[in-house]
Length: 283
Image (cartoon, rainbow, N blue to C red):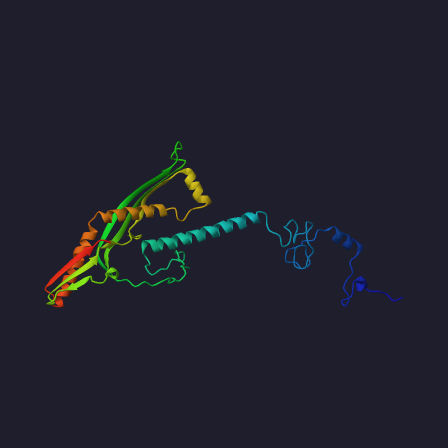
C-alpha cells in the first residue's frame, strides 16, 4: 500500500464534503428560520399553506375577508347615501337662495299634458246683438249631513266663492215682416224688436274658488276608497242659479233695451232719418 500524507483524510477540492452522522442529527433537531420572503416557506411565495388553510401560520384564510368586513361595507353604504342626500339638499338650497340664477334644478317638477285635441261638434250662426253684460259674485255655503250623526263622523260643508257673467242680447232673427215701417217722406222710421233676453250664466273658474271645506271622518275615508271627481258639481250649479237670479233682478234687461235703442238711432240718423222709434215686443 501506498503511504498517505497528513491531508489525505480531507475532502478534495473538486468534490464537496458529505455531512457526517453527527451533522445530520444536529440539522434535523434545529428549527429552521423561515421568513415571509423565503421561497418555499409556509405563507411565502410558492410555499405551503398554514395549518388553518391560510397563507401563513395563524393568518386568515387566503382570499377571505377580515373579521368585521360586513360592518365596514354597511358603514360605507351609509356614508354614500348620506353624501347623496347632502348633495341634493345643497343643490335645492342653491336654487332657492338664487346664488346661481341660471342653475337648473335636476329635481324640478314637470307637467305632462296628454289632453286630446278639441273636437268641433257644430257651428251655429248668431244674429244677436249683445247690448249689456253683468258681472256677479256669489258666496255659496252648503252643508250635507245626517240627523243624529256627529259632524266629525259624517259631514260635508263647502264655502264656495263663485264669479260669473250674464249677457243681455236682442235676437234679430226673430224680427218678422212688418217690423220696420218707414214714413212716406222717408224722414221717420219705426222698428219693432223682440225684448232682450238673458244668456246663460258663464261661471269663470279662474276667479272662482273653494274658500273653506269641512269633511267628516267617514267622508274622508270614502274619498280614499273612491273619490267622486264631480263632487263639486252641485256647488257650481248652485252658484250659477244664484247668479242667474241676481241678473234678472239687476235691471240688466232694461240696460240692454236702452243700449240697443241708442245703437239703432245713431245708425239710422247716419242714413238720413230724422225721427226713429224703437219699440220692444214681449215674447
